[in-house]
Length: 288
Image 1 (cartoon, helix red, strand yellow):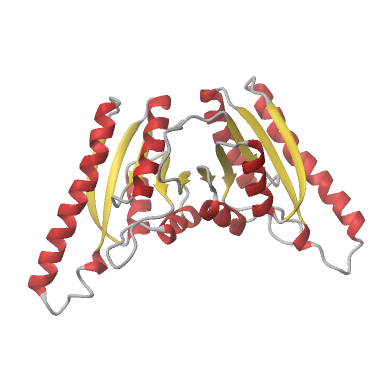
Image 2: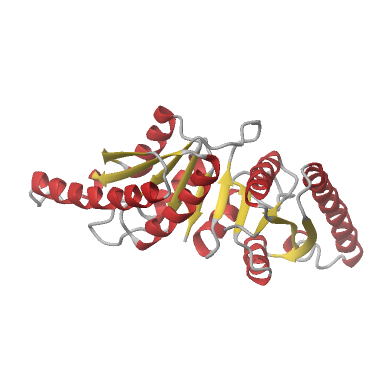
């Protein structure tokens, strides 16, 4: 499923952690890895436009740092005997990452949610969120900066029955299958979406029915792969319910769509995914 994995890096601890997760999946799926360091051209062009020599010096310094960032990841890939290629590019980070993914037929992007801080940052949370929100390629995100556990024993697939949520099922199950993980299917009735003018009890029951249908699709798919599956239907705020479930059930990976239903019948929506990516204590695989 993942023939080529793209790993953007800025040298931050978050990017290094994401690289380790990406390399682990590459080893499991026999993938090639592409390392990419994006230098934000604004950092040496706009700010120093009236001082060409200073801009050149800044550009050279940034390229030297980027080279060092890539070298540390190349050493990791070599250690695990994973085929790789590396490149430094200049441009707007999130656009450059997505263009590179398209150019090289990338199947998965692995990146951290927290990068460098201050004026020298190249990859950071907002860049990751833009990649997740605007790209078509699946993205594995992590905010973990120190961890030696890269296996997946329990995979959570939140679902609202939307097309994007259903697309994420296949990716979550592919990883669960490789690691012989237990699959958890969770659907949440968003209580904040219930209009006060409606018959609340009747509406909740109707939405529960939709939730049951959504999780049943995960169950059918998981069982067809011979995987154990657990189902839950919760009421509350979706991203909080997901976060609580991850903690209580010892989840190792969340696989979810980036877009859910629209209108009053939605349970999981894009903003829920963004909040989950931003706050999750475990890696999140997002699928558009």
